[in-house]
Amino acid sequence: MLRAIILAAGKGSRLGELTKNISKGMLKLFGKTLIERQIEIYQKCGIDDITIVTGYKSEMINFSGINYVKNQDYATTNMNESLFCASEKSSDSVIISYTDIVFEQKMIEQMLQFSGDIGVAISLNWKKNYDGRTLHPLSEAENVLIENEKIIQIKKNISEESSDQKIGEFLGVMKLSNEGGKILLRKYLELKENHTETFHMAKSFKDAYITDMLQEIIDSGYDVSPVVVDGNWYEIDSPQDLEEVERSSMFN
Image (cartoon, rainbow, N blue to C red; front, side, top):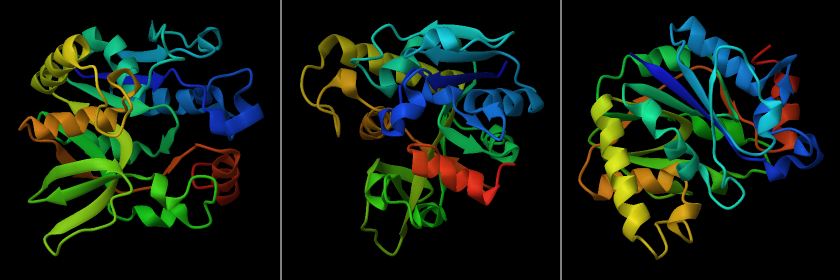
């Protein structure tokens, strides 16, 4: 059975007053919240077992027929910790998405075709989304470096590639098989017990992003595969981003 997990624990501090009283995922775009948009897309793709990981202003997130898990330490941890709050929901194949990514149904349809253990949605035409984007510049992109159809590096601001490599952007959506979920959980439990230093790009393990965890998986010898998707997508990280999406009407 395929499940979905929506990571919605964060406040979205760059959104300022817009998230003073609601979580980022409850922002509305053309009359629907960001979370509601994702739920509808998952359900249209036949995924009804959906879990939302909440944190900041969790009491404001309430959709019928949805499972909820709260990251009680959302204020002092990051995206990686939120994911593993829902670890029991990754016992089967699962698609995971950041709550602040607006995407079309075709992205999830393309992710459903991935049959490996760990696949991440990426765009190779990603730079276009940064035109005129001053509050979330190009240097903030979560890039992937691809070689021989495998991701060999994932972090912010990868700028150099060789002739046999490609740079893309991780779009905040990933798919895990049952085995892929087990690989991540084993590594998470091992690190949570023993790791006390900086962790890849994070100052500590509890501050880690999912990209830090994926890099650890890559460095441990496991394959992390790029799933190149097309169609419209956009990250809502600032008021400027919200205005741009509303102006363009790409998701209206």
